[in-house]
Image: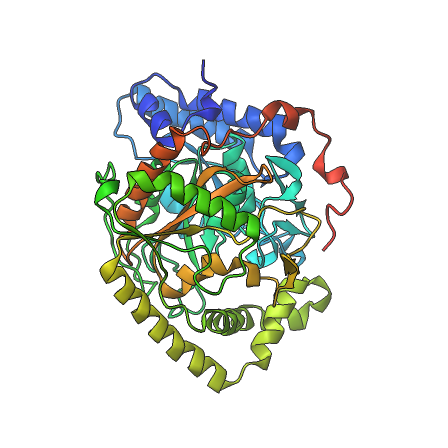
Length: 488
């Protein structure tokens, strides 16, 4: 019999509605999974299981009494430690906020609760989500469940690991330079970056600069779409907010009717040889199921410079005072971004904003001729978590701690919806993530294409990714005993 912790969200919700699965049974299975394997991976960093059990009993009573049930009714959801959950710490991975316990849920968590979701706990992040290796001085590192010596990527690394190991069927994440997609790729789950405004950011400080967005993570595109249907809502506090109704279920898509483009690197991303080789193999295997396929990419002129400047400006606005007040408690990645921002001139910012406009229009023209773009989700294969970030790729130095995320931030700058789906292992035996990109505001179709591609992948043993070995994780020593667990 399938352990309830291993059920997908859509299937678990269906069984709950039919009274074939109790919310209490599902919650207990998820708690048991946390207790069995979290010591080995350090994904869940804060929780209140007594409250979860009480809420599960209330959810079960609603089912038995025949009440109307929300789309997430009875489903445990893991929350990235960037969002407030009343009564649980919100640290942002920052020592400055190690004792911060909010008294109210933020808007995203409130929406999940209103839809019947149950909060499992908080998942680990890099400090202020800066960087794609999930480690900080508050909670330490999160390890890849497929190889606990490797990085889980980030910044939504704790959420990705919680999903991959069956701690929860759904999780939240956020994405600036790939923080939903990178950890999904490294850990073998699904991470979806929506178009700007689909998931509102009512607390975004630079409201008119929507580079960062919250989004759903799950084990499959269909499950991610279920969570997105709740997260996607209008909110007047976000000037980019737009009410996009997601069809349920997702629309049918004929892969053979799609015009498809494929690129290994967008013409600029420093993509590792092992990733290029794996991507070429996957495209070759998928090609018979697709419509006309061409190797091409949108014009990404200036991508590195645009992203560097706008990212630095965002960090400067949010963290300048924090660095000034607590210089000894701000880590190297956040410090580097603030210093980059301080070095930028008004001319630098004006040029970056103008170049982003040209960039966006080039992508819009490209997608007049193409329906879907396929590319790697991450430029490298998972590396040891002891490496804060890759300083070189195939012997070539990287320019910054985020330069290796080019395959992800290429789409961030254009504002196009993008999803990473698991697509087997690379030649090092580690998970490989395939990124699917579509037209701006065509979020449902991107997820529908990803669902159909996932079905093709699942039917091909060479592309199918086995789940993490739970027996090995149960027997593993506590990750916190590893050398460098808290170091940065």
